[in-house]
Length: 475
View 1 (tube, rainbow, N blue to C red):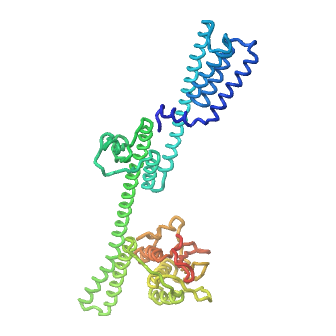
View 2: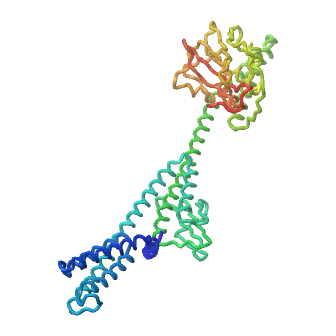
View 3: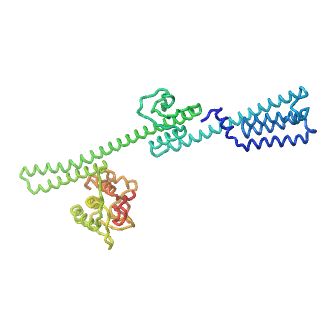
C-alpha cells in the first residue's frame, strides 16, 4: 500500500495528458464565450463560472490540475474582465479583493475536492480489502485439507506484500511481540488465537520490507487468518488422532470379544478330547483335535492377513489369469465348506481372462462362497454368475438367505462385524468379507454388496479384464 503523499504523486503522474488538454480547452472556451457576452456579465458571474471549471478539473485530474486551472483562471480573469482590459494591471483596489477571493476560494475548493476524492478512494480500497479478506477466509478455511488452506494463506500474504520469503513456523520458540531485524529485512510476527500464540509468521526480503501503516494493517489482518489456519491444522490433526484412537479401541474391543470366544471354543475342545484320549478313550478323537487346531490356524491366519492389509503392507503385481481356472480352484478348495451344497454356475461361452493375483483372488472367491454357505438355508443352491461388462469382469456369489439391511451394506465389510441376529453356530470370526475387500482393492479390483432380486444377498467380486489397461476399479 502507498501513503497519502505517495498516492498523490502517483496520481498526478498517471493523469492522462488529454485530461489536462480537455480542461484547459474548456477554460479557453468558457473565456471566449464570456468575452463575447462581457457586457452582460458581472465580476461575480465570471468568478463563479471559472470556479466551476476549477472544481471539475480538480475532480477529474486531481489537486495539481485543479491548482493549475485556478492559476490560469486567475490570469484570464484579470486580463479579460478587470479594467484596464488587456493588461494584468488592477485599477481598482476592490478588484484586488475580488481576485484574492477567487484565488482563495478556488484553491480551497480544489483542496477539498482532492480530499473528498482521496477519502472515497481509500474507502473503496478498504472495501476491496475487506472483500479480499472475506474471500480469502472462505476459500482457505473451507479447504478440504487444513494444510492446503494454510499454504494458500501463506501464498496470498507473500503475493500481496511482494516479499521473497514467507512461511508459518509452528515449532519456533514463542515470540511475544513482532520483531524486525537485519535492517528491516526480516519480520517475525506472532500468530495468536484467543490470546494463545500458535505459531510465528516469518517474512524476509533482501530489498527491505517497507512496512507502511497501510501494509502493516493488512498484514495484521492476514496474519490473523494465518493464525486461524494454524489452529485449524492443529484441531484437524487432533481430531484425526482421536478418531484413529477411537477406531483402534473399537477394533481392540471387537478383537478381544471375538478372539476370546473363537479361541476358547477350540481350545476347550482340544483339552477335553486330550483328556479322553489320556483316559483310554477312542484314539480316533485325534481327528477332532486336528480340526480344532485347523480352526485356530485359520483364525490366526485371518488376523495376520487383516493386519497386513490395514498396515498397507500388501503389494501385488496382477497377472493375466483365466476366470475358469479361478472358479475351478475355488470350488475344489471350498468343497469341505460347501459340503453337499449345490453351486449353480451361470457363465458365458467366451473364455474370459482378467488381471489379478491368482492366490489372492482364490482367497476372495472362497471367502464369498463360505459366507454364502453360512448365511443361507441348506436346501437352497448358491449361484455363481460370471459376466463381462466393458472393461470389468464380475463374479457374483448369490444366495437365498435373509439378505442384509440397507443400513448394514457397508458395515458388513468391517473387521469382526456380524449382522444382528447372526446364529451363534454360524462360525467364523467376521473377518472374511473384510479380508476379501482388502485383497481385492490391493490388486486394483473391488468387492461390493447388492440385494438380490427375489430375496437374498449378492456379493460381487470385480476384476479388470485382461485386454484393458491395468487400472484400479472405482470404489
